[in-house]
Amino acid sequence: MPANADPARLNGRSKAKAARTRGAGLAALEAASQEKRLDSAVAAIVEEWGAVVPSLDRDVRAIAARIARIDHRLRTSTAAVLKRAGLSDNEFRLLAGLLRMGAPHRAAPTDLAGRYVPVTSGGLTGLANRLEQRGLIRRISHPHDQRSNLIELTDAGKRLTLSTMAEFAQVEQSLMAGLSQADRAKGNALLSKLLHSIEAALQ
Image (cartoon, rainbow, N blue to C red; front, side, top):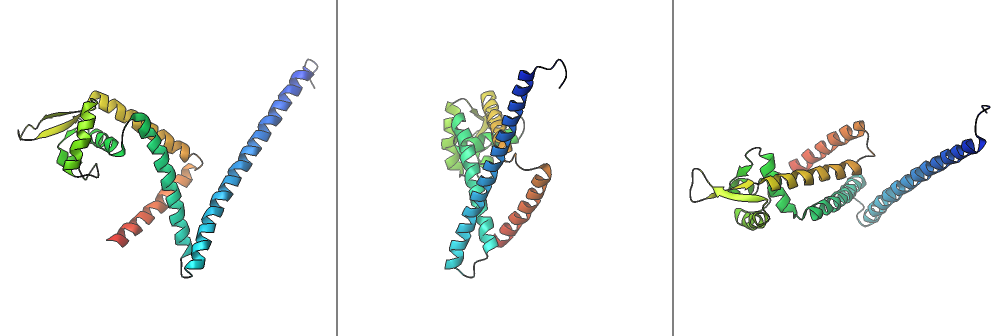
């Protein structure tokens, strides 16, 4: 020990370091325990179905169960973001569609329905009415067809859409923080193959 060292201060630092180490150890144990519980839950589902359907491909059932869990968690987390923004899922889709189109952020309802918002042109009218009342979009005359209008994103709508998307990204980042960059690349590649397989099977 250095001659000018304060034994009490050194002892305090040692205790703080030990506490941090214990805390990290407990966090690691809790994370491992949670992973074990999740894996056990999936394994239990697969075993139960396997007993009922002997020909069941257990790997496929396990993949489907995990995807369902991931989808539920993502939807729950993003729904909370939309609730804070005061938007429904389709209202956000409409605003986001206009934003993603680029300046001047306007389009005909027929260009938005189906492609950006999973509703018909008629269903889009109700969404547009609510967003217009909040000052998030405006209707303007179509330059080439006076019988129809275009929907345009307002500055307030642009700000809300950007802030909501930023919060979405933050939530997704936090949910996937346990994956390394290499894990994310591998996961994307595997999910791409899975999506192609599903789409091909549905054609």
